[in-house]
Amino acid sequence: MRLPPKWVRRVIVAPLVVIAALVLTALLPLWLLIALIVSIAVRPRLRAPRLFWMAYVYLLWDAASLVALFVLWVASGFGWRIHSPGFQRAHYRFVARMLGILFWNAHWVLRLDIDVRVPEGFHDDDGPRIIASRHAGPGDSFILIHAVLNWFDRSPRIVLKDTLQWDPAIDVVLNRLPNRFIAPPPVTPRRRTGDSVIQDRIRELATGMAERDALVIFPEGGNFTPERRARAIDRLRAAGLTAAAERAEHLMNVMAPRPGGLFAALDAARGADVFLVAHTGLDRIRTIADVWRELPTDKTITMQFWNIPRSEIPDDHDARTDWLMAEWERIDDWIEARRPEESLAPGRAGRPDPRHAE
Image (tube, rainbow, N blue to C red; front, side, top):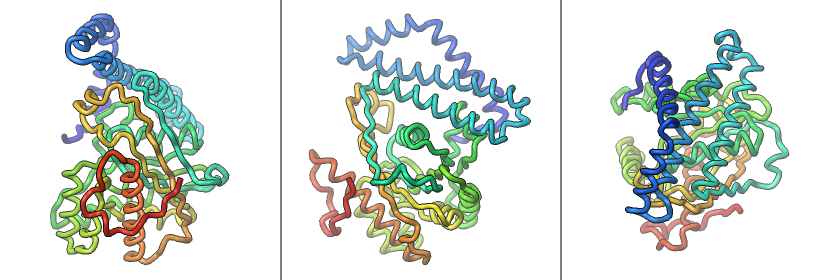
């Protein structure tokens, strides 16, 4: 869906979210009663009340965030000092606190736990980092940023899809911080021009990162779905990259990464090491129907980090592309190894054993 102009998002969409939260709060006992009746009649384990409560909490969370962000805007001199270092730090603290509240609620309502595994010495280095993660499900980006802010004590610079600006709180707060909302260019003969513009924006974002900064990017460009996986393979074939397309066909849990954005960040932040992120636990939750089926989730999201020193990453474009595909194969194998109930996916037997990191 096409993103509306900024003034529409600020003047119409954001106030509607606050009004909706107030109305829903006033009618909360009635909605909870209806959800309880539906749950008893249709499904066990209080699925309807759980789903309603999470939706209500998220709406309330969004509305409260907008009110707090408005207060910060007024305190900054009606936006005059909103980008000053002091107010940037205040916004990072605010985002960290709000994500902490959101995941505290998810832990108790959905029985959701997060197990983050990092390499030895992960917390000892204060230098800037580039964090490249697989993308699967609507919650993984929230979880990753929650970890970066609250557990790693770093200031993230995030590359996101522009459609996330439909969420008013995300729209307001992340546009005040050093992030980049990216609109994928249309598939036309001028596609390369659009890709170049995106890479320039990411290069600009990665330039000048200081200590304890972390650039977060999702090289696949979107949540994994079988349809998007197939389109990614077709795109490689259309570009004449037959060997890369054949390797991508062996990736059953992730999509072939788009290297341009990550490579632009590598070139701009030459002193930054790279951390790759694999995770599993939300793979089957992509739609509202999936959420309904899985509730209560009773899940542990396992998130594994691998450290790639910058000195080990090739400078040559072709060699670097081969390196990135090999790392994505490694992520794919890591995910597959954590699905013992499923048979080995077709087409995987010919790949060498991955390097596992636990």
